Length: 363
Image (cartoon, rainbow, N blue to C red):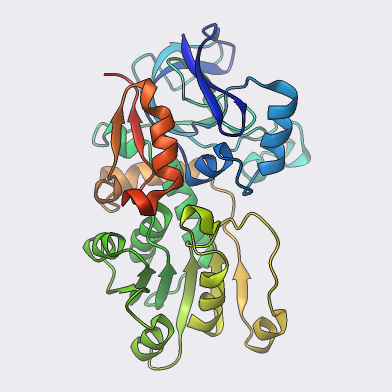
């Protein structure tokens, strides 16, 4: 079969490799639609972010190696021994992080909290190949009402569900969301479904602000043309937001906001409020912790997304409570277009992309 393998950072090649054999507890799938996550697109270029050292070590010791491809929709073509609840022809999406099965949490039937297991696409091969092998424990069935393209977004959406759950929104809470890429737009919609009142979003791109308004933002502020902090103060009677989601930070080389939006988030939240850190920054930063202490701010991070979160995303999308199509702007065709999808996703601003670029793997 054909599969994309990495020989180093900035060096991916379409190789002929042996097709995997189905093992107990696993299924073989035909990937239908796959998108590189923003993190994967940065890692492919060698830009420091989540798991940079881990991927670097694998490239040094194991290259060529199949990497990335944990955001996908795939069809089952073979079911391994001991797998229940799935059959040939089912479409599936996956939770990326897997339990290890060995630690005290896993042995106490609390495996949804385990962080010691492998991650699809980082430690295990993902779906940038004609056939992939996946652990059944990671999978959920995709509802017939959800397209292949939408289903490829479910893993990202499950992380956004976990982020909103971590915020513990109160009914009617005022919410600000910095960044209206895929996760910002998802947090917007999940927050609305979870009882948020006034929702104010911020981005530097007009196309993102437009989609944000379409998906339910009460105010979508373009930071290039608006004094964002002044506008938020005015819209909240000078108090600031109850909860701020920071979804814009990261490498300025890829058009992300660096640390600026986190500093704005601290200024935009009310005293006693919460900042939910969704972004990955790729390195340490300096913060005046005394400011957070003085104002009783809570800077929290999303809990790990579980299979239950992923199952909830299926219901939310199938019933239309969360809309994914408006953010899907770039759809490519054929396994040969995978590098282009990485390029678009790594430079979404330049390509006017909102969601990562998707690849429909089958013509």
